[in-house]
Length: 249
Length: 151
Image (cartoon, rainbow over all chains, first blue to last red; front, side):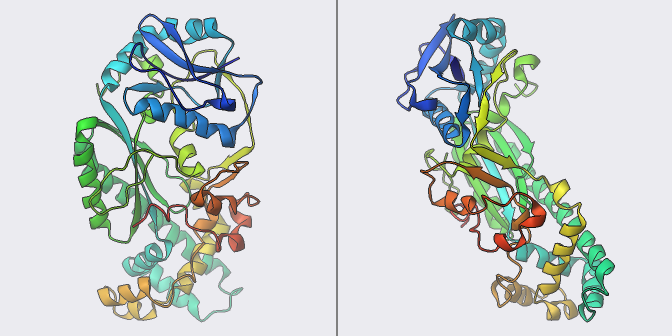
């Protein structure tokens, strides 16, 4: 079995020092102008928590110098011929096109989480309904106010959802002008505010970073913003094998 | 991957990060090959509780209510909008009282990594907790996942 990491253009530094899944060395399977980065795999069961890092490390190393299209984690093909027959050959045109439009561009992720206490305090302050309900419940025994407490929590949840939408929109408006494309992803965790992925020209990374800094300043301590990258374009190759040239290219 | 924390928005060179961050970046992302095989992935469990689910249960409502009720902002209600009072709320005595209500419904990640870095240790504490409704007490002691990344 062959584990597949990603695809890049041939002759552009496919040598990889990082060990792959199961500590196996990385090698290339070539077809035309394309090279698939693969390693040999013994079994069909992977200790994912460990191997997810190997997958990441291999692509990260390559992506430092050239554009590589990540293949989805956990993708395995039969052998080298299968890599050509199932991946490179039938998709050569589209892969080449994707590599062309992604060339010289990196992914940057901007994610934010709320400080819960701060967020809830803001909610109470901003929403007269929540504040009033909170006051009404205050003196009551817990059981007596059961349904009011549910209603209060529901109101709070609604306000939290609204905050999430607003903050995501504001971040997108602030950062999108500095990016070639963007993806809105589902924030992970209950305190996630937003999760955005941006495709940015390598030369524009600093300008983008400055925009992130401004956003961070504007947000104050309401949001804990994480700025992660540069990354291979993980979020910009989904479904593209079928879609041909992406709309933003 | 790197997490830039300076106010200038500097981007550091990519470096290994916490397991949760790595997973967040690469899971379910990337080219999908026709007729590919997905190997069995063991030793990892990711329960992504998305926001819509998080806010849609009575249990969560009650915990939101509890958290809001615990907030020490009685004075802020009488004089809403005073920034100094808000300052008091965010930096003052109420801190840690409401910690963990939202955290408690964060995604749980279990893994078998033995080389997890500092950030992962916070995550791994949540190993045995699987659902939002059973995690209230345990969540208080967890370190925040982005403690390294926040300023």
